[in-house]
Length: 118
Image (cartoon, rainbow, N blue to C red; front, side, top):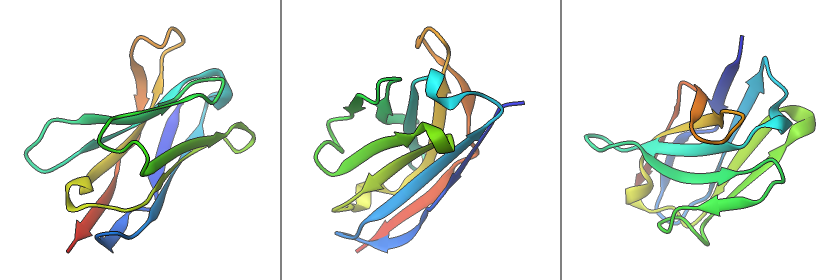
């Protein structure tokens, strides 16, 4: 059974940094692309960043140059380093693992709350 567990969320102030962790079990994590999404209150879930099997990153324009996605396949773990946080970064952050064809997401975590206050 595949399980994704996010951690590292919290309450921070604008301009602060925070690192989220996604730990996977039940699959060989290195065989799959994976992503971070977020959902703000009363908004649709949106893409934040992804990392493919070769560890090539991709970012939403809103977080590029502020967030860094990385992975450690030996630990079945993915990270999201967030810096220069803004109020609009507030939301529940989810990690997701893509299907083998990278056409969608087969597995999702339960989410971790990030709240950025002024």
